[in-house]
Amino acid sequence: MTSTIAPTTDLDASLDALSLTIVPDAEHLDNIKTQLDLVLLAIESITNISSEAMLQAAIDLGLESIVADRVSLWRLRQSNPQRKGQSGRKKLDVEEARALTLISCHLAKAHNSEIRHAIALLEQLTEQNRAPYQDPILGDYLDKFQNTYQDRMDNADLPTPDLLTHLALKLLIDLLFYSTSQGSRRLWSALLDRSLIA
Image (spheres, rainbow, N blue to C red):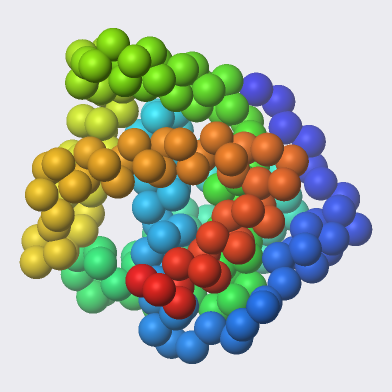
């Protein structure tokens, strides 16, 4: 899928659209970091994209100064306090959180058809009172999400398999909303709201 580089004026408008209704303190930023990492994990799991696709999204959006390479992307994602290990962890500032929000929604929009198809399958299975794992696409998504989550997150914070399945499916549904033209505002608003109650 081809992408176009957003003009700086569009980028500024996008960043400006992600205004702060509150000024997040350190604890709120920790919650925002966690949520952003989980959104990206859901995108990875449903689309099979790599970090290279995330870096390409940063280039498309003119965000290379914030997400310059794989190491900087890894450090931003490693700022999630639930991640394993301390090495390379950094504080995530508000501009970096905005950048990851735009990248997440750009990727969700680029893979909107895959996300829509997966949700249509989920609705179908729910109507038939069947488990999501009974569909190959949803089963693969849930397996990848759970395996990657267990791989990357601190063992002390690991939820039960049922809770992880619920989280993965909720994030999949959320991705549909984040893939719309107003997706970045929706995600940013959700991040700020969740950071206060998480």
